[in-house]
Amino acid sequence: MPKKIYLEPSRTLMEFRLLPGLTTGETTIFNISLRTPFVYSKEEQAPYFLNIPIVAAAMQSVSGVRMGIELAKLGGTAFIYASQTPSQQAEMIRQIKKYKAGFVPPETVHPSTPIRDVQELTRKRGYNTFPVVDEDGKLLGIITKNDYDVKPHGDLAVQERMIPRAELTVGVNIEEIKEANSLLRETHQSVLPIVDETDRLLYLVFRKDIRNHLDYPFEVLDAHKRLLATAAINTHDYEKRVPALVEAGVDVLAIDSSDGHSSFQKETIEWIGKHYPQLPVIGGNIITEDGFNYLVEAGARAVKIGMGGGSICITQEQKGTGRGLATAIIKVARERDAYFKKTGKYIPLIADGGIVSAKDITIALALGADYVMMGRYFARMEESPTEKVTINNQVMKPYWGEGSARARDWKEVRYYQAQFVEGVEGFVQYAGNLKDNLPETLSKIKASMSSVGAATIRELHEKAELEVVSALSIREGKAHDIYLPGNENSYNVTNWGN
Ligand code: IMP
Image 1 (cartoon, rainbow, N blue to C red):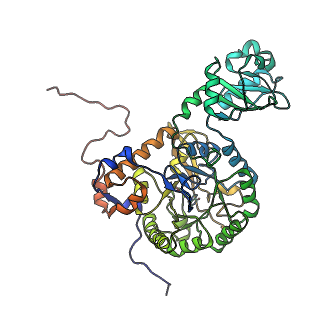
Image 2: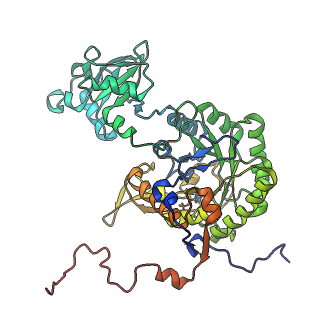
Image 3: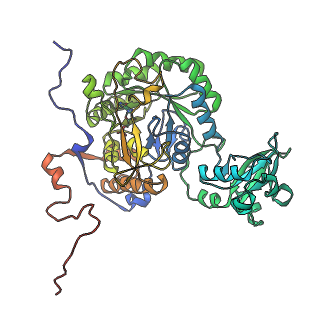
């Protein structure tokens, strides 16, 4: 006989609906806070808290430097994927840490570079301002597309067309965006180069970025005002990888595994606890109470839940292991709450895999998760590290699982022991910039919380009432018995007049 058989089927998030509670002036969407604990700590600020309950999955097709920067600016974090060498991954963390809102690490050109090459660089990069520096990195000038016309100037060297250093207003060792702004305001330049005391170029500050900076009130910053940077690790090479990531300035680590209930995770967490006691580690993924207790006892400061639900995931099909995400959250959250009562330690839970829409997020939170991790959602964005393609006239981006053959080209991925794949490779519809998509998702979450009468995620945990719905009521919840023209671009309407 097996150890346990559950005859109740496990549930997915899609099978639940929230019942409305009392909405008051305190719970209108303007009063709702989405701040949420990130990892267990006695302190209540970053890196232990996030300003939104959403993080991006540690996947090659999702979380690179751009996603890491943009999502931290918007209040969350993207876990830089571990399916690359430790030094490559550490370099990504370093770049996120180096980033200062509005301060752009510049790509430079040499004074002898031909103008033709600058034009090619402009085409490749999509921007046209290049500082000119000598071999020591000292600023000699700036060249933009306004300074040349490639027909007459293509063969000239950059130094013959650049605006020379002497004619530029330059900031020395400026660290505050406000200071850069006041200098820039007095010039006609669209960009302010920042140099050190020996005139070595450090950053560029663009006028347009200063304006943008004011649009990021929720950015997650560390004690030195640098963006939060997080990374995934595996249980094979942590003795090499973790020191490289720490050196680069990583704030929080997450062990990336489809089955985290393992002695390898315990060893990894304990090793990090011994060598870097201040560095929080997230364990997972698990879907049982036993898995939760095992990782928390090993020292995990948050735990990721979910197995088999991801949009690119075929783990359930391949191995027959898994559980509906809703059931997994319910069971583990109950255990987490008991653990909190017993020890006073609140372990945040992350719902991971298969979360498609804002309502899935709210339901995961209502069931007891503190934040969610998503891959597909972010793979669709401009900031994911992939190139756009057109398929059947639709703009798409590629998206592949970390256990797919494509990601496995990197040998030590989470699924590396297996002789079979656990993930697929496909495409997702391109959605545009994160900044244009995320606010809508967040405002839907707030609208649901407002209906429940919860001003915070903690209140949502306490006040939410949920109900399992039938397949028919899910159908009823969609638009029905009405003609919807769908995706047809044009259709004939004959107006019958009055
Ligand atoms: P999504 O948000 O539904 O796309 O799911 C993303 C999640 O799927 C990730 O955070 C991982 O937990 C999981 N995942 C990533 N790659 C694979 C894979 O190749 N097989 C199974 N699960 C995966």
